[in-house]
Length: 333
Ligand SMILES: [Zn+2]
Image (cartoon, rainbow, N blue to C red; front, top):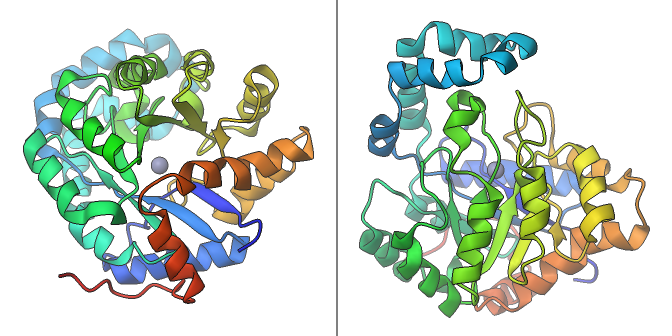
């Protein structure tokens, strides 16, 4: 396995629902792009937490706060959510119920060498329940994803401390969504928990945990680059890294120019960005007007440096040596 290309931010496609089939679709996209390893992040939805934080009235209030952006941007689906807020809430709940994928079901198939799983932290469950699930999955899991948008969970929240302690024990990673998100979370007031400065705060308080600022704080349809400055500032902290998933190549180039390339990881966000597969996301990086060694660092050196110190890495190497790169159903026991 010399010079493998690693995609540090992928997901299983929503369809097919069967996790085994979905894993095969992801592997196909990796093969097409020439990617050897992928970090695969599960998305568990938390309907109860969503309904505690979102109501038709709250949507109207959020829209009123960003009226100037809405008028300029004229994005039809965002306008419809604002004009029909009851529909928007129902539609989100329907989508979440349909597309929820349980961590355990996900990891049963997505821990087979080439696919390296990251579980969702789920705020609909207690912290102890989250921890219990993680412990049961052991070092087959690289870490957890915290979703400040979908889950309204701030990464520097005190309650996450036991989870971070567990991640420190396996020398794993915490990936945090930053910036806005498709759906209601295009309205910036709903993204206020997803600031890289909160990741920076969590990283300062949990020095033995490595944090990844996903999307460089930049994703937003209404206000691209929304928290990009904060992401660059967070990267000054030793245990903070960032990924390029769903980030306009313009911001990737600026990040490399302003803070260097040692802590930036290539990620495609497959299959979340419509019309962008792993191959074209990789091509975007390869076409950047930056030194070749910076590209190599983002797609190979930096990701391997992080993965090789994780306690589950030996298992991945073993699986790859045995040629077990293909998805096989993991036998539980
Ligand atoms: Zn993602």
